[in-house]
Length: 186
Image (cartoon, rainbow, N blue to C red; front, side, top):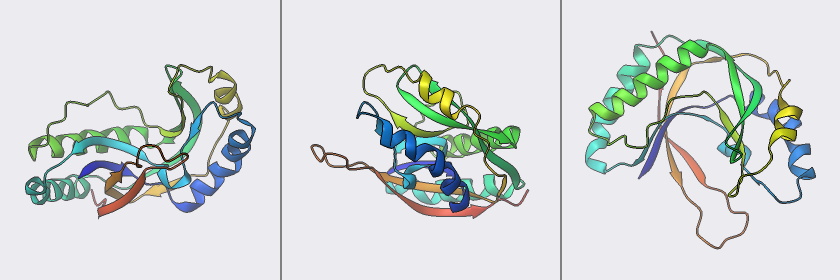
């Protein structure tokens, strides 16, 4: 199954973000693929396909990582882009803590035997739109750059399964299901 470790913002934070993103989505002439609200999360460690045999060890190690990490404040903040291909909302507040949790989730996956070849330097972000071709995302980053969400307390680490949409189905979004979540306890 295709898995990643994540921090999932509460519904109130997502609703707040939707109020500023949805008008941009409606005004877009179809050049961007906007992510659905159900797909708004902070990916800490993308694992890709993980075999069933690795799951018990992975669960145990992610539980340990969560247990060693204290809850922390976070809020959605500002906007940015990755090379004209992804538009994202950033984070503020417990940025050092989310970096630490991402490192621990990555280490848990590696030590469980999950090959982490797709590892990238962690930038806390929540993707709101993508473009297959390089796009001018500057108007969107400018419109969203001053966004300041209300703070919330991150209290758990989630292991999420992503199911990609069938090819050829216009507008279909990936489906995300929480496999397990562990409370932060540090």
